[in-house]
Length: 187
Image (tube, rainbow, N blue to C red; front, side, top):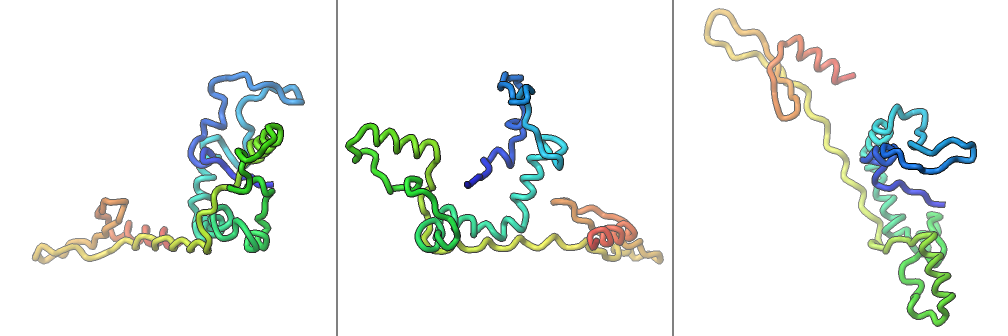
């Protein structure tokens, strides 16, 4: 049994809520069907989607994505590699295994069409060799840079300053703030 999440699970919390108040029927325990009942770890539909998004964009998923591509679209979709990966499905699900127009029996054609419509199809095989691993994520941004402020040539030197990178903007901060930022980033 294969279950994959539709894209909405990663960006659209609205599909989990019945904001329109539509009549969706009654469950066997006689409770009205409304919003999707979320797992205990999700505080809200927005939190549920945000956690799915973080998982999808995690380094773990990124570093294993090529294995999924091999199963769904690639080298482990068909043949001995698919069998070795326990990734074999009913023959009707594979593209090109049945020519519905070539069937002489209308009843047989309807039955095969119903089978395909109800159980789905395996996507076309796009790759026949293993998919390359995704390049690792870039390294984190550098730590804030501290340097003594330029002296105006007077007897007193200016206090040390620190450039803290905040997005595309650098701001000056005191040396104490710079040290605190370093400490915070190292933990």
